[in-house]
Amino acid sequence: GQNIDQPTEMTATEGAIVQINCTYQTSGFNGLFWYQQHAGEAPTFLSYNVLDGLEEKGRFSSFLSRSKGYSYLLLKELQMKDSASYLCAVPRDNYGQNFVFGPGTRLSVLP
Amino acid sequence: DVKVTQSSRYLVKRTGEKVFLECVQDMDHENMFWYRQDPGLGLRLIYFSYDVKMKEKGDIPEGYSVSREKKERFSLILESASTNQTSMYLCASSRTSSRETQYFGPGTRLLVL
Image 1 (cartoon, rainbow over the protein chains, first blue to last red):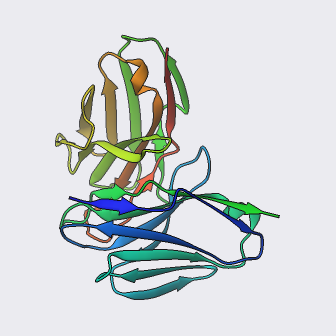
Image 2 (spheres, rainbow over the protein chains, first blue to last red):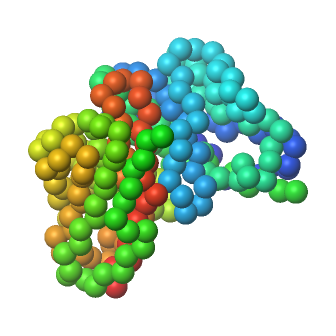
């Protein structure tokens, strides 16, 4: 089966850098997704990692280590609008179309 | 842009009522999903469908059923609503591919009194 852990809450200051960790245990592996969810809204896709290493996309980067079952989302130059929950998700089977979501990390960005 | 729409943003029902939640996607996606999201529990899969008239149970199917008569539409049915089904319900769709993200609808916040 799959098990995913994330910190429940984090707080950071506007302009700072924050790293949100995700650890997972899964019987197979077919990539890891990160989603952003603002309060009261639907999750939206941020990033996808299938190979080890860092994927950079503007202010957001995502890192994956398959051997350690570990990923992180790095947010740079934090803005108030980055206050949201961040969910990591892994496919629950080898087909990769059905995900297990982590509990989410609620990030608060303070002025 | 992919668009996933849900029939209601907010819904109030009474215990024992039959409740229909509708989800429509406009990108010809094969896969559709229903989740519920509760504080501290995250997103939990109720049912999913890989094709028309196909359905598979997720992690918490009890008290729910689904219908997929057309490719673009996936309905979630609460046969007899109970107060513990008060939740945010999210529909999602995706293409058939191992590296495709899911696209979510705006959600329906259901209150069962």
